[in-house]
Length: 501
Image 1 (tube, helix red, strand yellow):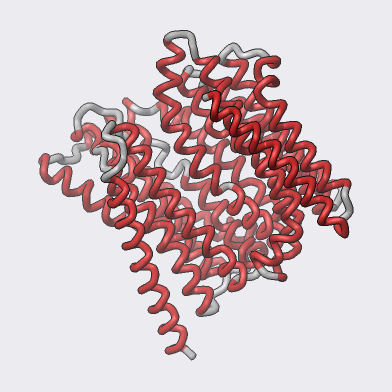
Image 2: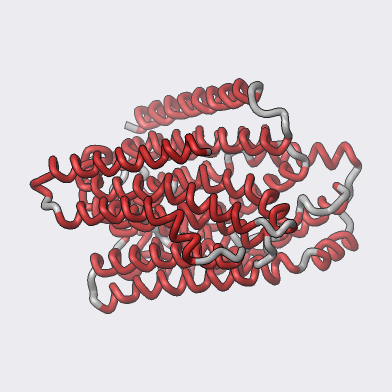
């Protein structure tokens, strides 16, 4: 039995190497035909690598859901949520300052400050992990010793990757970063598949996450060491003190915004698990991982391309029209497609992920009702950075977090998972819609202007959601015929907007 498990793991590792190599070759092939402009080429390179990595992850989901139970998936999601909360402040956000200094020598000292902070946080995490295990031990099903080791290794791996990644950004090594993103998606997914086949359960999912986080870290770290060895860079105590003081605003201010942002995405998993059950957390983790894939690809790419344009437009006093156009485009391409997921979830989820996951269909359906608004909101958050409204961004993130957590507490008061899920979805949709309105008003857009570009996709999405709630399940032909009609109207709107553009 042991030899059979080893053979399966070895085969999975060989497949992982082949897929990663194929992904790198694909990226290198298309890089020949990318725009010559440096910024556009870099964005396209990273977007292509991210797309390939996410395609690998999504393609593996139907296999992973047949190897792991919802409870195991939920336990791994709880671990990922906790580590994510620690990692966002593990380097005191100094890694964000690595690209800023003019000289590599100064940047090296900033990177060393970030690594020193990481070592301190890893040590504290190791001490606090047993206490965290007593809080989350029942939800993860892991012993205190195993949980502590996994937390320490996970924080150290992810934090180290953040530092060397931003050094690569400083040196414009976007090709190398793209390769590591492919390696992360392929290595993490294939490791989870191999460990699932070997029957490792929750530990297999978590170890796969750690392998995925750390994949490519050694390559980028070697590049960072080579860069500084060639330039003769040395770390001095005075330089460390200078770097820590010069960029002290990052730990003092940006850490809070980053923590609020990650808490908004990880708190639902932690609260679903602690207030209700790890199984519900597993359903939500699957739903969000599936539905957030377009957000991770398009949202990040749009944000990267939008920031320099919004800064320039703001200087000319023309940021409003640009933001209004973007809101209209994002609403048109997101609201109805996610609403269609709501209608089809009950039929598609059991077929795609297995009968054991059939109960996840309502979670997928309700999550789809608000992810469309997050799809609009997420790229717009960079607008507040471009117009230097970081304080407003922090306030909005805090309000959004309070609103969503309060909704989950309402479900707890009613002792109902359904009430919690519905209240959380409504609060999320309202919160992200309100965030979008606040961004628009920050660039002097009126509610009438924003309503003018949003009402058509919002009406179509609302009609689709109404159909899913009103038409009985035994009349699926009527439901899908009406949805096809709405999609046809939506496609006509999109085509006409494209011709006008």
